[in-house]
Image (cartoon, rainbow, N blue to C red):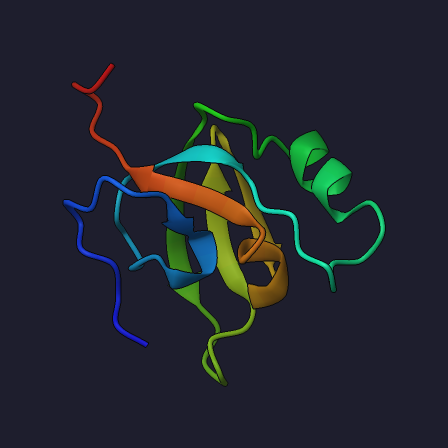
Length: 95
């Protein structure tokens, strides 16, 4: 699957993000196969609209898990969890 362009204005899934790219959370996607409470857990971890985010690295075997920074915290997320987080490219200059 092609990586989203850094200049894309449309939200995309955190699981598709290029490691190191500066991002901003735009929301959480509803998925029919998502585990009960997944959106609530991600929100409790800090994946809230407007928060800065960045994929730091991907796991060596199949890219799972992802090391993700949101705000000042770092978490390991499975790709399925990261797919529920919608992000967009972000720069510190941007409103």
